[in-house]
Length: 240
Image: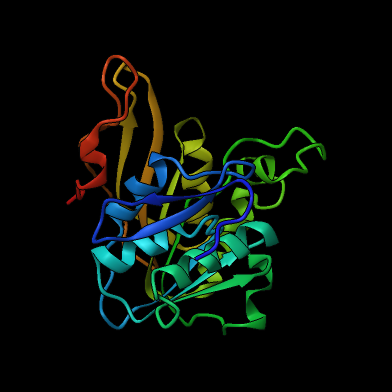
């Protein structure tokens, strides 16, 4: 496959999967690997990814679990085209469909209450206004996807009993959980990540639409060593 200016091919170190990244765009981080390892799917599950970016989470899930179909929504046309290219590179067109559209318009493609699982590594930095217009800033700031919209749309997509998986900044945990419960998405499993220096960074959470009250808090996941280097086990560790 021909790579364009700024693009590079990377090995995902998982069953020979590859991904194309562009140094001029937003590139994925360990957040995506952590979330992919947390998600549990069933062979008949029809899923939606909100904000697929490079497509890395959906592509990793193709090797780590079984599912019927993933509809991966991406607002930015540049990132959508890149994700489509990686899906094709890995011959996953029958399993993963990239849709370049705002997730708020999902009803153009999918009926309400029809999805078994939704997952997302969404933008979680608070928007400072209308200046976040480049590809990286849109991927990082919540101007185009607020936490309120994320939870509302996820609830609209899911069947009763369907699951939502999210990774989000820990400092906004209360806001996240409030909006989940407001939209009938009951937290069931969750854990926090720690950077190796004692700083809690992220919350990773599974919520069930219409689920009963009660959440299992799992042990903290240390993502870095004391020097700040990412730990290799993030690529292979499954959170039970």
